[in-house]
Image (cartoon, rainbow, N blue to C red):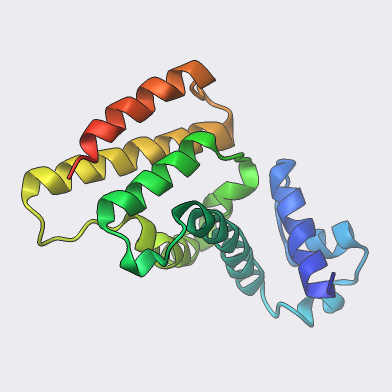
Length: 174
């Protein structure tokens, strides 16, 4: 593991344990000096954006594996179905909320998350309104599922997830 990877992994561990990430806390967590971390991430924003990239890359790899074909070639309903399946069955924790972890950096972190995840969840504007609404509703259900799992706030139990999947499947019908 490179030093850069160790810093990112350590910072994600901090987030997952409820800690805050700063250049100093990341350095302390992985046994480096602050200048040692700054060699790889000149600012806290650079570190936080790299954390968003790390989490998004993990999501993209898992979603691509589940989809089994290039995302660009998949119809919107199939992309959203894959996203929904991941959101209902994936293993999420507080580190998955990295884009919300720093109030002062929330705008650039959210912008990066949207940029990295848009290919999975964007609904084309040229679709009929009713179809766009159904596809968007399915996306919002999926996002609620992973958010509940990541925060451990009212996550649906496994038997309820099958019912949620069936409801969203009706929303995803072409």
